[in-house]
Length: 448
Image (cartoon, rainbow, N blue to C red):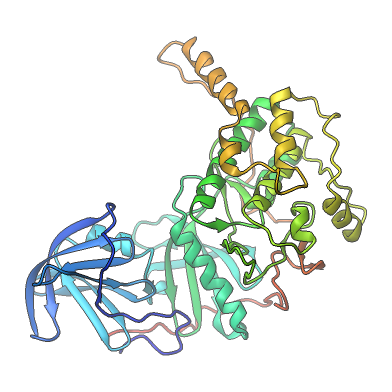
């Protein structure tokens, strides 16, 4: 049985002529390919680049299949061994050979249908606007992951579905050491399951509440965030909800390994400003131009990270008073931030002032921030300190604190959407999903 029409993922699989030059980042493999037309196996060379599988035709032209959001399944043939089957509607493509590496790579781009056969669902560790996040144990390797689950019956509006698909699309693109890793996506008749790496080190918010960091520590952390942000922007993506709660450490007791998480409000940059959700984010971290409903660009993220930088230096305290939501939002819009009370170096103050500049025209970009003089001096300091140590020793300028697990209960976060107070990351007119998911009754699709 092919993939049910109730699928939320669009997939139209067919061979198309490749007009541009193939990417240099590709994998070549010789495989036994089943020809549906001739009903026989043919030994062919295939090329994989991202979500595309390429083949060379007899006329030397190259055709490709874009397998994004198609159904992926491991299969076995008594003669040709292990294989991969890719399905879209009535179109089916299968090949056999040394497919282990290709299958692991294609999992990122395709949809699988047998989640409960591969994972055991554990404790609830978080709630979002549309669904819930659980710890999950992979049955084969016993490794722990985080799985974001969505009950399809709760997705009543197309904008809700589009938001989920947009987040998955974006996380497939942003493959960076300091961005949370999306590993694979499953769909059953009743649910969508999105598997991520499990971040165990806790939120930056929690660290700032527990420990006063010195300037070197703050600079080291903020550089890693800016480095990841510059990469995200280079892919044409705006995050739009950067705040300490969405900056999470990968491991406990290691604040050097911080990652950007929660891309629920992220979108692809558009010059015309026509986004799925145009005015979104969290009060206290919003760029003034976004609050004033002006067309904005990547620099809204720079402003948000600037506020995080300020809070790091200022012991976790925001530059805006939290008397009430309206007052905080008004202060955020005016952005009258006094840096003189901060005990920081001139270079640190220079970068910070350029990041939180209320004028987006003169505000620094993420790429410019990444090469700021402050970071050059910080790197030189690390090199000098390391050079003075015996080779058998290692150095870290970070005094690593003890951070509680991400599984600890989180405080409710106040988010900004349409100049209103709502649930975390709540888009326009979308209600918070309530109630427990019932996974035991989720029916898994089977393919023949």
